[in-house]
Image (cartoon, rainbow, N blue to C red; front, side):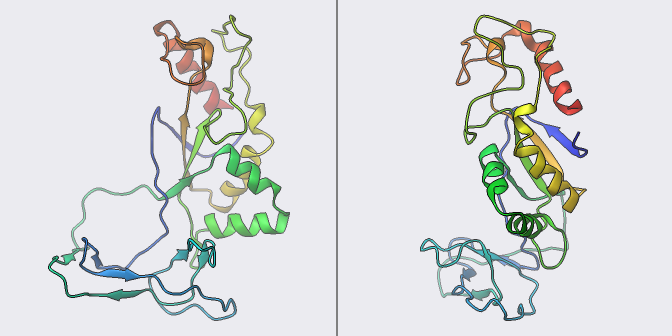
Length: 234
């Protein structure tokens, strides 16, 4: 069993962010403009003293999600657009965290890495300290997503059959890749929040009997609710 906070949503979107703090202004189409520096090829150089930390990926692949050891430069071009001043002394809603989606495909690729490389990657992504990103929110699919190697739910039965009591419920397909990666992540960041998001209900609960499209039949509302309970308990 994986111990962690899991939130269930039937539809959700999480956008990936790198942790950037201490910025007092943003670009509004021509105000302050962030100028990406050239990739830092000197891995031995000490990081510059700055309160802005960022990882860079270039289209030409000269830098692939690489932490930069140079200061982020801001320029103020002379344009007709106004500059937005952000008053960080006034606050409103709170933010639970920032993060990514961990798909089954991603977990498979991560697990194919050598142990040392895998541990280094997960540490950089999820360790919450001054030198790593410290992702605080993670979205995972309940069953297969569109980026999984195959289509499945946690209660699949032969065509024409049903399983209202969920006797065939099983998360065994996640035990090869997703669950081992999740356990490593939680060990690095025990406070991480996990959002569980289903791509589809079991096809025997749907009016089109298919993974793609269709709607949940009303007679299976309770069975689908129980499906989520079993997911959390598993």
